[in-house]
Length: 280
Image (cartoon, rainbow, N blue to C red; front, side, top):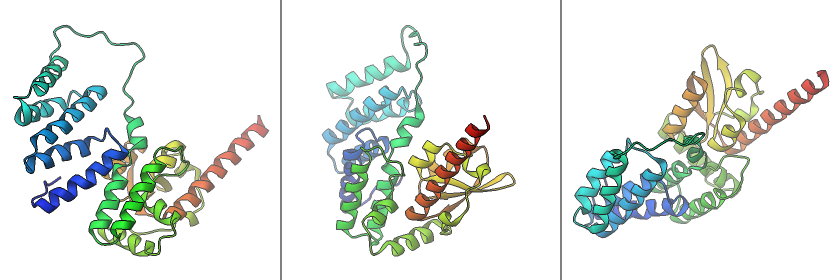
């Protein structure tokens, strides 16, 4: 990500990413961006504050690959500060322990858990739509509020910008969809009009389709046709390829159409299970 250059850009970035942290206090991208932004405006105290929060997250996730870069930043931002020096020592102890720590049987880091509740990509999409003038400041604030609120609930559909706008009966929804399609280069398709194919919808777990906004609706040889709700979430595309082991061709769809297709998939799975019970 390019660093903001003007004071206005820095101020806007700070405001946007602090809103992301309100929703997700441990979002690493937001913490790192705020650290850099405050350093640019000369507020080393705030920069160090966010860097220490980032350090706490990395230690909780035991991400030793990211720790060397963190150490470099700690030294450049605040190595003269006592709290920074203590954090540097703590990180170095993790990277170079004096004695190997015994592993705990059965304990593993669940990388998918964070991704399943991560709304940062949707908040970033909302911010980009506001910057492009597709959403007003009031629209943007409403979307951020609704996404943040929904992230605390047990939803059976993805938490997305498009869902929020649809639920609010947003009058400019067509404009938003056209803008996203044009910027991403992905065609807009009504996936809800497709008949669910078992070979396709079983490519991804139901829980994943419910929370990540991606669903396979067609299998063409070794390739998959995938409907998504946020084309700018590149991590999502990588996940789909890894989970399926196939190459995916991605399409944008509407929240309403996505929910219709997901509902039809649920019905198809329930019907298959009922049929299997009768045969047993």
